[in-house]
Length: 254
Image (cartoon, rainbow, N blue to C red; front, side):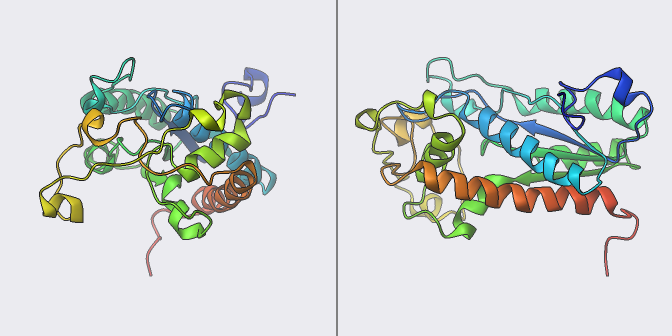
């Protein structure tokens, strides 16, 4: 049966008399993930998390809708990685402006980007869109920041690492290459100390910081870890969907 909270699956018969409180837009990327994970890793993760979290919220009575996932993200630092697809931030702004124009016109005043790609940086874009759509509540979530909070993963990283490999082993194991094909995910650090310490920033040229496009050792990843972590993310995200859908956005602070 069509899931009524997934726009791509539901239908006009259901939606013509519906009133939605919150629209969620998963936004991923299409890029290499070490040797062993699919290019659609961020898309798979974002879509699955959005859908399962929406199920949790819908079953609690929240009126939400998950929009189709945007499959391309900002990959300006990976222009020489074969078929890594790039959307510039200005393009993302234009896409979001058109989407928000539709939602705002139709009375859906709460909107979330469920971000699934670290290269997507939304704060400046959301600030500018907030001035254009002052009656709307706009927010962004980054599910991958829950990885360190979970305490589940031994090897830190931020791309095709233990955390992401575990998730994809759980969600789409048929797309993961055998373990003997996994790269080490070793990151080469910037020689200028301030950039390595994190209080100064410059874009990382991906082919210079990693031999296999991974950042983080995936060797201790497992399907079991992925399942537990997926359920943890969705429980938190589902409750956030509920909280936002039910909130009076004019009275959020105390």
